[in-house]
Each structure stands twice: as structure tokens, then as C-alpha cells.
Image (cartoon, rainbow, N blue to C red; front, top):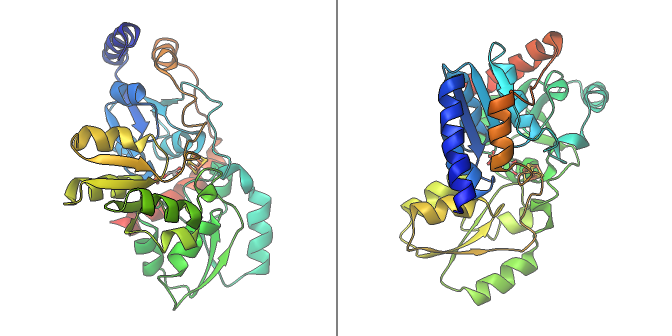
Length: 306
Ligand code: 13P
Ligand code: SF4
């Protein structure tokens, strides 16, 4: 950590106290941004932490749909994003109009959306899921037909475990995880033969099939901590390695592919976090009609996930 970063962290701590603020960061954030956070987690853990917090102000270091989900669940809190240009290209692949059209085509289906969607899309869906709870929640649904959006890879990976349900998959994907191939797996397995392969379920099904474990970012971190293995090939965004290395300094981590970098997750830096706390910028707003409908979708997730 540089001297400048240390000074910024001190300033951030002071501003948090003055403004009764909570700073949260996703595991994919840059290491120094994670150091500024009171809570570091996956998308589900952060949604819950923001909802449970008694602080009046939340500074969300992640991408837009995550901060928006925090606002939906905590309408009376001020939710800020240090860099409002940090979006998720996968979330942008689906619009509310597309969901309405799909509903007309599949009237019997229960519409399940990944949390990587806008508030306006969540408002059109029946229940939300994250990669850490999708299987549990969909298993609990009575519906035999599931319309899953927008991630076709996560959808296909869940569908493979539920042959009793029919899945209709929207053809969206994560621009980062979708790039990994079975060729990457073959070459890394040769290069690092004693490693366990851990992947995020946003990776294509043919890659997930070859993994020793697939799970949410938190799931992957827990696996590393609990495992007797000493080396791991990581098939998710490289930011998560910061926490893995911190939790297990003696273990070795190799990236499955050089493409595993989410530029949007790296658009937030410490100066922006400081400015956000100091100047109360940039506030996330969701119109109340959309918020209430999207809240129903997220709250159903919270209920079914417990
Ligand atoms: P998690 O739900 O594992 O935090 O993943 C969110 C995400 O955007 C993965 O690319
Ligand atoms: Fe979106 Fe993929 Fe980045 Fe996650 S890693 S925020 S799904 S683009």
C-alpha cells in the first residue's frame, strides 16, 4: 500500500464516523478499495448487509445493479456510488420490454431474474436469485417451467441439476466469465497438475463440468479456506484472489485465464470513495413505483433463501 493510499484510508475512516456511513465492497473490487470497506462480500451478502445496517449512508463499491438493489431494500438510506459509470454489461442486455414479451410467450413460466439486472427489470420478474442461492430458491418454486434471465450460463448450470424442471434461458452472458474455454482448463491443468479448479457458475457449462467446485465468489473463498489443497486455479474475476491470499497466505493461486478482469469493477478507486463520503455523491435513486415492485422480487429471494 502506498503512502497516498494510507492517507486516503485514514481520511475515509474519519468521514465514515462524521457521516454515520457504511462502506461496502464486492470481492472483485481493487484490494485497496476492499481495505476501505466495513463489509466485503458477494452480491447476496452485500444486499443483506446494507439492509441490516443501522447507518444512514451507504457507499457501495461495486457495480450499478448492486447499489440499486441496496437502495430498493433500504429506501430510507442514502445509497451512494463513488463512480456511477460502473455498470454491468450483462445486466444491460435485458430490458423490461423484453421480459414483458417473454412472459406473453411463456405464460405458464415463473420468471426468475439474476440479481445482475436493473430495478426496472426486477420489477417485471417474480423472484430474484444470486449465484449463492439460485439452486435453493428455484428448487423451492412449485413451477415446472422457469424463465431464467439474463445469464444463460448460470441458467444452464442450474438447469443441469434440475432435470424435473423445464428452463427457458434468455441469451445473455457475463462478458468476463463467458470468455473462458475448455482449452484454458486443459492447459492450466497441465501447467498446475496439483491444483483444484474453482469456477463461478457464470462460466460456460462445459467449463463448469470440468471444475472441482463451482460457486459464488463467497463459495469459492470458503472452499479455499476449508480445503486441504495448497494450489488452486481460479475461474472467476481476479479481485477475489486478494481475499483468498489474505485468508490463506501460504496457498498458491493461478488464474484460469488472463481475460478474467471486470473493467467495471475496477472503475472505483480510493479517491472516489473519499470524494463520495465527503460530497455525498453519486446518489442512487429509484422511482417509487418501480422500487416497490422490484422490492417484492428481492424480498421473495430473501424469504426463500433462508
Ligand atoms: P456474486 O453473486 O458471486 O457476487 O457475483 C456477482 C457477479 O457480478 C459475478 O460476476
Ligand atoms: Fe457483470 Fe461480469 Fe462484471 Fe460480474 S464480472 S459485474 S457479471 S460484467
